Figure 1 (cartoon, rainbow, N blue to C red):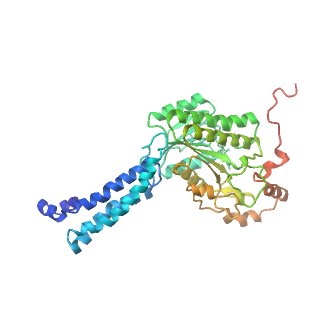
Figure 2: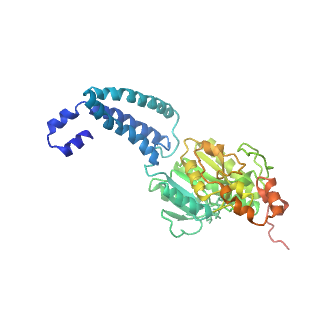
Figure 3: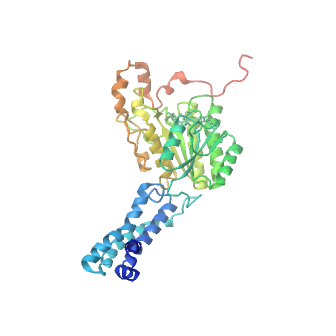
Length: 397
Ligand SMILES: NC(=O)c1ccc[n+]([C@@H]2O[C@H](COP(=O)([O-])OP(=O)(O)OC[C@H]3O[C@@H](n4cnc5c(N)ncnc54)[C@H](O)[C@@H]3O)[C@@H](O)[C@H]2O)c1
């Protein structure tokens, strides 16, 4: 760097050599360990190793440090000063390398170890044309990820990546998507949003949430894709009476067949984590809305921006194994534990309280509010939602 700068300023090469003699080593002493450390973090899929501006800065700083510091010290003390700078900071870097060495002793995640460039991860999003999919796809692209979309409806206007129109419940169709993607390196991770967001019969729900998850998981294992982030739901525990703070370690307690299917999909993720060593994160989403519109949503709201933050964190968290978190914003009236999300690096920034005055000014629906206050899943725990598990065919015959 010095030589280049010098060469730009003068053509007197012997003078340049003499001037910068003894300063190449300090620069290399920082640059090489920094390069190695960045490589280890990249391999470990750590956010500081790839995809983020922070990661780039962290490793750029020690690399540039000797170039900035040594000339000052050297001018003050002569050439030997380069060493005085290198030794203490070099020692610090060695300590960092020791920690990284310990990280390397654990097995790297399966799949594309050196996958992601500095531009982010390659992510396949199912249900990409849906309410959450549209927001999350563009948010992940803004955060530097390369996003491919998969949905049973055609590509929506404005989508920028590869698009696949296919039914996720059809394993052959899903396999064909992964084969097509593997031609350009394959995805690093899947975000699985495809599914019915409302209640229906048990077989419909199982197909929509469990069979689709199974088809994606089998294709991931076949193609070495190491991570899935799943849009689970608070209805997986919807029948739980409301408490002060709901953790993720409570008994699965669905309030709908929809919730039953979410519990089963989470169980399937857990099985594949144990059998195949992939990472699977299930986000039990609360109320994904532009803004909260009811008393309950003041507690359960997940803002659009926080949803993007959450999926990004779930995609990039180092080694989550099998993890569950609640997908809600940092709501003042929230009663779902945000600690499991924070442990994965999810830092929500929105709070439904901003809309409290507006929500509370609307005429109160006391019956609805009482039902919503009783159970985690709100009114879905009431008798109004009771229906047969199986749609009777040929009814009336
Ligand atoms: N919206 C919420 O507040 C909320 C809360 C909790 C959980 N979730 C979950 O998040 C996911 C997305 O919800 P949403 O609100 O965006 O729903 P949505 O209906 O708006 O979007 C779902 C998308 O998935 C697609 N899809 C459905 N079945 C498919 C299949 N078999 N193959 C391919 N594509 C399929 C649909 O065409 C649609 O584009 C769902 O799994 C839902 O259960 C949503």
